[in-house]
Image (cartoon, rainbow, N blue to C red; front, side):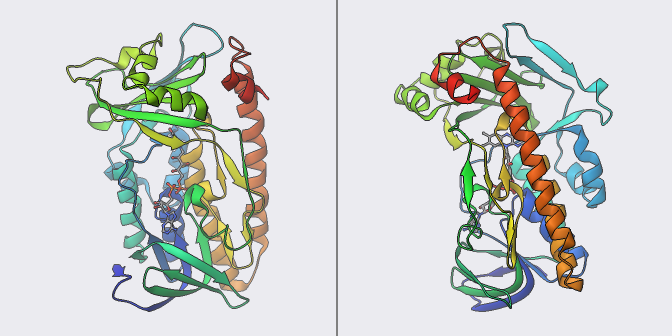
Length: 365
Ligand SMILES: Cc1cc2nc3c(=O)[nH]c(=O)nc-3n(C[C@H](O)[C@H](O)[C@H](O)COP(=O)(O)OP(=O)(O)OC[C@H]3O[C@@H](n4cnc5c(N)ncnc54)[C@H](O)[C@@H]3O)c2cc1C
């Protein structure tokens, strides 16, 4: 067990190759290794940018417990989130207290630390890690062959946990569908503001999200259409000017740090899904299978859930050739997508103050 380098190795074999070491991939790899499979987890880890997605509901606890991840999660030192605030549909601010939640408080993560802990948990279970970029994948009735960097890998099965890139599924015939366009402009701010609750606020051309993070960092994110994002980014202080038009979100702009030069990161935030989440010798998990509009705050939960379920399904196929769990997994993801799409549509339609604005008109449809 340990890390292997693509530059020193030409051919590797395993039972299951997991592509992507994000939350879905790390959990899937761990579950498979704990069930006795030989697993290689592959990730290029090429992005130098911080990843977005840091809010988890309290309801994650049973899933963490079942995957033996509770202590690893605690090691990532998440910040308890005692509740959520929302200004949506009218100008008032509505509070939801976690005290009413049977699972207790939610969590705000240091995302890099969280992923590192999940990857360590996979390694502890016996997963080998290969840092390389997957270039090509082909499937036959015997398994899959992958070219990644200088290495060739052979596996009986492959799990696509490569996020929205869907780098495996796309090459093996998977078809993706996208929801309406949505970009997120994100900035991290070291602030010292004491109220760490999540807050969302609807605005004339999109919506804002902010949350206190570990180490007193704060995330500000504005979700809008690409055209509006482009206009804001063309102005040196466009993001901050827009932030200052908010009624509640701007309250997080306290502290002694200069805010005029906050670097703003642009992220594709539109939901999307695979029409079919599995095929011969492959299955998709996490965002690769189904990615959500961040309004739902469901992405990480889904990544962990589908990581576990897809791994259990592949394990059953490897052990006995039984494909029942795989078929149930595909049905379950389709159900989740159906419920999510009707809920997110319903939620957008609750905001009717700017019906003619292109953002709201697009998301009401
Ligand atoms: C703006 C924004 C805000 C969000 N906020 C929240 C939130 O508050 N709460 C929440 O639950 N969710 C949130 N999400 C969603 C959440 O971040 C995702 O659902 C989650 O990251 C999915 O995890 P994953 O493991 O499926 O994919 P990812 O985390 O995307 O991991 C995929 C991995 O695959 C690797 N990879 C890709 N292609 C290749 C290749 N060819 N070769 C090798 N490696 C490859 C990448 O390097 C990456 O590490 C948000 C998303 C956005 C865009």
